[in-house]
Length: 92
Image 1: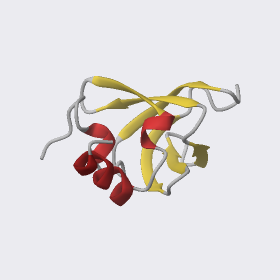
Image 2: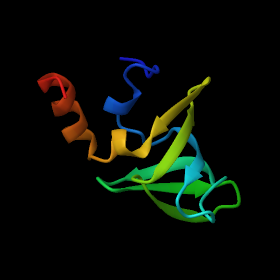
Image 3: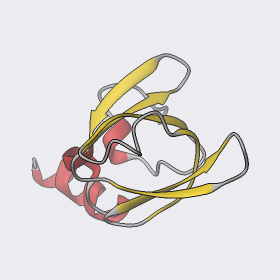
Image 4: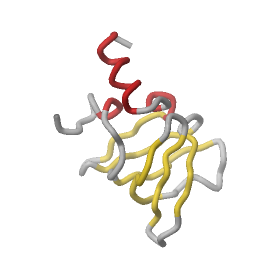
């Protein structure tokens, strides 16, 4: 299944291009790179300058580029990938 706006939140996000577009922590806004790991509560992003940033999913809004931008609220993805898939099967 390909990533698209209707199913992105149910996929593993590792390998996707991402930007933090909103956050309660102003130092995280604008962080951009590739998701290199994901936990239930964090996205770990490798930035363009080869730094690794751990960004909490909650209280952030992310834009994924696959290739068109898709905006996702952190609360929608604040589960591990397996749990997100279970939620779609149960009807949220």
